[in-house]
Length: 87
Image (cartoon, rainbow, N blue to C red; front, top):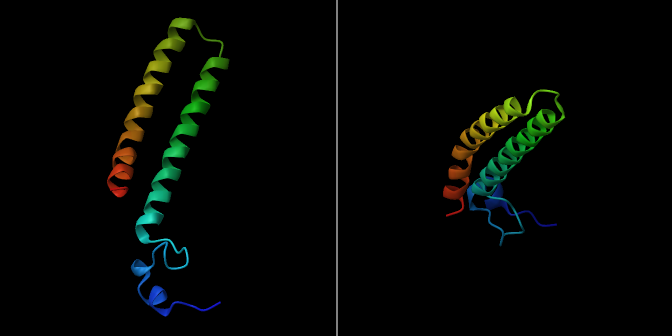
């Protein structure tokens, strides 16, 4: 398979049209998307753990609201970054 020497020398010059290579922007998008997935997964785990706990309903509701606020707070900057990268 022939090697594109320009793509090796100038990694930012590689695009999907050049043999399917990922650009630096693509890699950033993937990293941010993976981070968002990890945040989503952790929130899901926290909610499941809370649902399985034996604490009172009122306490569960309070903790769930706090978890949701923290989840949104953690997720927001990555979501904004992802949106800016996709432009």
